[in-house]
Image (cartoon, rainbow, N blue to C red):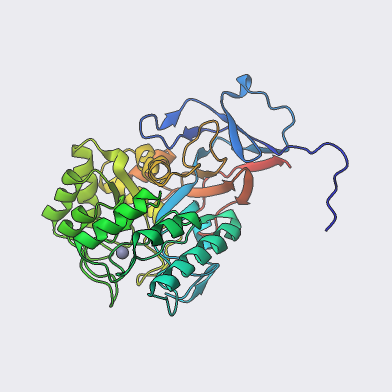
Length: 398
Ligand SMILES: [Zn+2]
């Protein structure tokens, strides 16, 4: 392909105007008093009132038609394998389907469903590096998949974590899914990982599928991984007193998943709220899994936690955006200058009893998605998976 280098390069400049409600993703200030967002080259440059914002030179203009703009949703717990295929339920195109559920970024908790997954140290390191490279280069529908998450096994030494970090691996798969299931070894390996900037997540609760095992509160506390993965079980949850102890005794992130125990999810939420530590709550699906793939899993968690957990909808959205971005060190998840121009645009679903989009979520309904934008580009328009949004944004210039 010949590159046209004649003439000045036009910057891509996105203007979204007529936003009816702007959700920031920031727990401490979840609703912004603004109706316009501008992004240049995929990064937000301005957020404010239309009359105060310079719209000159826009290459893409979107009329939000009074709908709601929020940061793209982040799924903190997925198990990808290769491309957009999962062998767990033998489905193709699952990631593209999640895009239609508002998910714009995913974090791998280990590529553990890979058929023939290597468990020797050289093999597991090679597979993690391969997954990191492959998913950095392949983005179905624009979705960013942070993958390459090795599952630790006995026999790994400090040098292995140094090698992994040097090769670009930035997180571990769920601790406990490999042969390391004791607190002392897990603690040592998590500490080595942390020393080289590799984040860690631990499996919490009973075994997910034959071959995995119970990880109780003592092992979780001893390992001290950065994220208490599926604290509400994946699917079998720990007893209530153990969940409360984890919330109280550990300072680490509390990850609540769709494919877990919903009652335990609500217990975690209530405990975090009492501790005034809602900033620790992050959401995942823990899918693909035995219970399938859930394109709307993160939306369903937002709605479930908001309606049954009595949390304002705008706060529940922060669990899947700003909180996760902060804990996972991502450049998306917040509507503020400098962040990725990655958005989901929603409206109340047609015929929801809720009068506004927030009220509809608080009543347990799902919002309808009208558009998804990733890094300043439209990745999807009216979702094929959500209930239809009452109003959808329109591209008025491109
Ligand atoms: Zn797990």
